[in-house]
Every structure is written in C-alpha cells, then in structure tokens.
Image 1 (cartoon, rainbow, N blue to C red):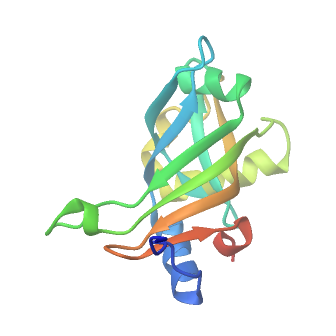
Image 2 (cartoon, rainbow, N blue to C red; image 1 turned 180 degrees about the vertical axis):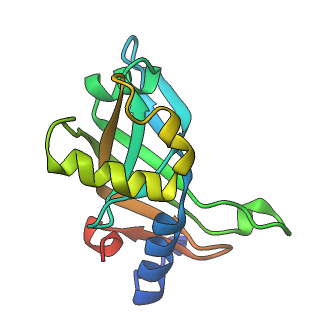
Amino acid sequence: MEKPSPIRPTDDEARELARNLLSEARFGALGVLEAEGGAPMVSRIAVSTDEAGVPVTLISVLSQHTKALRDHPACSLLVGEPGERGDPLTHPRLTIQAEARFVAREGADHAALRDMWLDRHPKAKLYIDFGDFGFVRLAPTGAYLNGGFGKAFILTPGDLLP
C-alpha cells in the first residue's frame, strides 16, 4: 500500500508565506560543500533580497564558505526563525536550493546592492567597503517550504520571486 505524500500542492498561500519568510530574513544558514574534500558545511550568514526578490549575502573572500562557493556554486539557504513560544519545529521555514553568483565590485549593480544592504544591515557600515567583502546572489533553483506541522511544499524559482 502506497503511503500518502506529505507534500501539498503549491498554492498562493504557500507562495506568499515563502516570499515573506525570505523578504523578512536578516540571517540564514548557508549550506555549501567544502572547497577541500567536498564535505558538507553550514554557516550562519547575513542575508537580504535584491530588487527582484533574489537572496543576497555580503561575505568575505577570507571565509571558508566563500572558497566553497567559488569551487561549488550549488548551495542551500535556510531562513525562518522560531517564534517565542512553542516547539521550534512547528514554525515555518524555507530551504532554498541556489547557485551562487558573485557580483563584481565595479558598476551600478554593486552600488545598488550596497545601498540596499546598509538600509537593512546598518552595522555593516563598519566593514562593507573592506576590499575582501563582496556580494553574492543566491539564485534560486528550487525550494522546500515547511509551513508548520503538516504543511510541506515544493517550490519553483517562480514561486519564490514576486
């Protein structure tokens, strides 16, 4: 006997929840494959979204996860914080599968991201202009939404972006 799938059909409510989780996120967990050896690794990163709703992070070229992304651009990003009450596993969270795309420091694109970043992460003013820091877009290739107990969805990039 075949077990019923826990995955629900994706609807507008799921899309809206996923977009809200992403747009409200200030931090997330970035999953990468280590540059040396390819072992899985997870790092907490600051995150925001660009004008198109694509997740963006500001990271140092000195970090292990930057080296990993340069060797293996495929990555994942987990966003969604537990609420103040209840079981943390019953609160919504979103895992985005993505491809890392490094943004060149020259040009209007970097300048626009810098302004957006400082608006959402004002304390980054202390280091945003250091030469070893740069922006990386995490272009979604797919996603999994856990909207709470019994609310699982598989999302496409089109479901995530407004």
